[in-house]
Amino acid sequence: MPSRRHPKSPSAPSRPAAAQPARAGGDVQSDLERFAAALKESERLDRAKRDREQQAKAAAEQAAADAAAHERSLVTARRDLERAVEAVRHAKQVGKGRAEADAAWKVAKARVIELETGVAPAWAPKPPPEPEVEATEDVDSADGDVDASEG
Image (tube, rainbow, N blue to C red; front, side, top):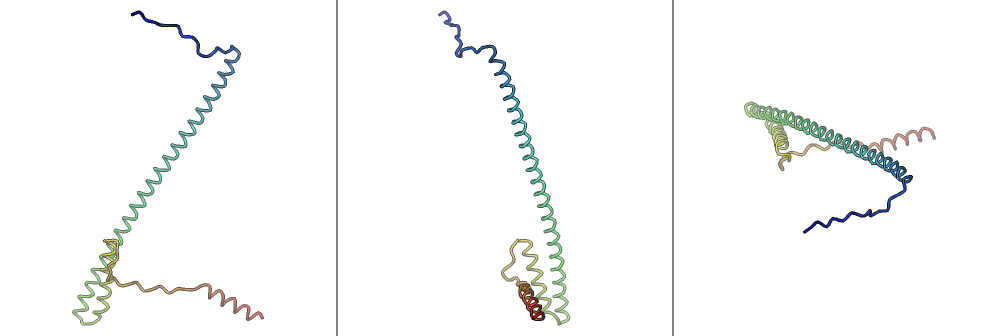
């Protein structure tokens, strides 16, 4: 069968020649705006990527520093445990200070277990409570003294 090619008719009416240069200028302007927006978006994405990489690097460095500090703490705790064991042996030989040496061993052993497992054992001795200093009473009493001496 023969081909049925028909000439295409223009779908949009042609514009006058004077209107086309204005449109071309508008297209150039919108092209420049789109390019500038794309460039800004690209810079924003690059900056965000660099920030994420810096944060990941900082997090990795912090994790490495934390791991090194944990390892140093564990080495120190094991050394303290060895000293405590030697102190218990010495106390048994001498016959004095066995209770203090056993208490020191218990503290040292609990510290090693806590560093190795992340959880303190149930039998671990509780640390002594820190004395609480109430600054508000000191301030009030100082103000009261000043008021009493003035009046």
